[in-house]
Every structure is written in C-alpha cells, then in structure tokens.
Image 1 (cartoon, rainbow, N blue to C red):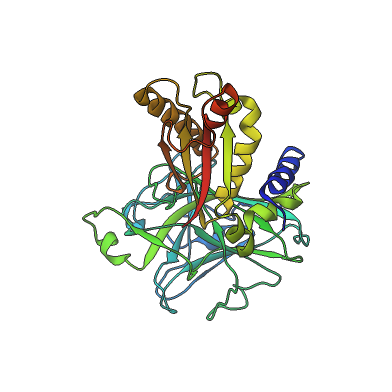
Image 2 (cartoon, rainbow, N blue to C red):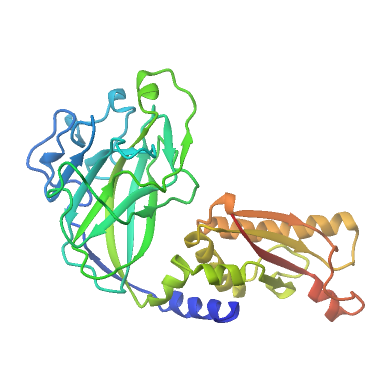
Length: 371
C-alpha cells in the first residue's frame, strides 16, 4: 500500500500532465436540435437524438424552448419559471425520491457518438436548476451508462443496475434561480454505447425546501423536479491515476484516516497568513481527494510558536487556517467537508527554545475524518 507522500506525488504528476481531449461524445446535449418548436408540456419527442420514458402517472418529459416568444417555457404549472442556461432549449425531469419501488420518475436516453473505451476517464458535466415550488432538493442527479438501449426496449419495467452521481459543490442542489454546474469523473468499463439521465436511485438523499403555499409543493413530496441543460461527456487523456481519487478503496481510507498533512512555516509568508505559491500543488491534491471521496472531511488547525501574546497568536493561527479553508473552498470543496480552528501556541511539536524548533511549531495541520 502506498503512503500519503506517494499518493500525493502520483496525483501531482497526473494533474500537471493533464491534456483534455475536446471531442464531445453527446449529440444534442444542449437540446437545441429539434424537429419542431414545442408549444405544450410533454413534447420531448420533438428533440433529435433523444428518447424519453416516464413511469407511473408522469406525462412524457417536457422539452422547453424559448426564443423571443417562440416555443414553450416553464410556468408555475411546472413548479417554477426558468430560462435556458445558454441557447434556447432545455428539458425538465421529475426524479423519484421515495424508496418505494414504484415511485414515479422520468428518464432521457441518447446513443453516444462513439462507445466508451475501457479504463479511459471521462468528465461528465450538466447544468441544472431546481424548480421553484418543489418540495425536495436532491444531493445529486442520477446518470447511467449502458452497452444496450434500455428505454426503447423496456417501456414498462426499466432496470438500471448502476447509477452515477452528478454532484455540485454544495451538499444539496437547491438553487432555483441560477443554473448550477454538476459533474463527475467516470472510468469506463468499456463498450458503453448509451447514456441515461434521470430515474430513481436508492442512494438519493433529499432536503426539504422552505414551505411555499402552492398545490405543486404539496403534490411533489415524493419527487423532485429539475431543469437540465448543456450536458457534455468528454474524454480526459493522461489522467489514468484519477481513479485513486474518484474511487479510493475502503482499505486506503481506513489506513489514511488519521494521517496528518502538515503545512509548515515555509508555506506562509513571514508573520502573515498569505500562502506561498509553492504549496498550491499539495492543496490542489487535497481538494481532489475531498471532492471525489464522499466519506471524508477535514479539520484544519492553525498553530504558532510561543513568541507574541496569546491573543495575537490565536488570531494569526486562525487566519492561517482560514486561508487554507478558503483556498480549498475556491477549488470547489464543499463547506460542510471542512472545519477550521486557530489554536495559537497550543500542542507544540518541538520545545520552542530555538528558531528551528519554533519554526516547526508555526504550522497548519490537516486531519481526515470520516463522515
């Protein structure tokens, strides 16, 4: 089993040798190509290259299109108003959130422009917005890949074995006004020909939205409804080791759960909380670990030596911890995955009798915790 330094080194090499292969693998992922303008709900059949499936009492998936009064945009009947993220077209999906097997859901499926290559890494991105008057927000948007068509051949009993998670940089996707980027990194099993978005995944978690006096709010307790636009699937080249970040083994997590990352005094400018650029690569690696590993959180603890007043040292140590916190936050690490404290001159790791020993005590420690 590799140690943490080896893990960091491998990620550093891979991250900085990254090249993106820009060929898009979805046809009409922006929902612009159509056979006619929609003029009512449930007209996703007008979209080119996509088919839909709706279970239970759902009408067919709705295709929205708005161009200067031409087309059909969502109203409060669909739970809230929204405009496209870009272009003119987008869709709305009802996603079941109840654990019961027969909960209603909607699905969209398309054939990839080329099959996925075994062990290659793909970046899947979409932009979503929660409908205004919906009862529940989700922690991710479910997607799936398949070697064979699923929807067209299973109009009554759909069976999807493995869902994957399009997640945002917040725990729940609650934004009803702006479009939110959701994404995931996927390592192909090989020969996947079809892509599906939507459906009911038993792993979904929900957050109850603030009460709104509307019939829609009361009727949607067991489903959530999202507007979706600009889905893309792009292959990443020279990124083979990302699987260590996106899907670390439980054994690795258990072994490293108590490992400390120590940013010593040379990571900061003298008597300052400003980070030096030389530390960015290590923090970028930590950000990737936290983003792609659901079961980990971190404590960010700032320390100083024993020179100066206790009050000043606590303030400086907290500022340094917050600097690391803000850096990781700007790299899209969710707030709820991090806690920071300034502990001043507490818990020294050396005796503070020499400049060398005091330098060791001026540090930020980052420890891993399980959720």
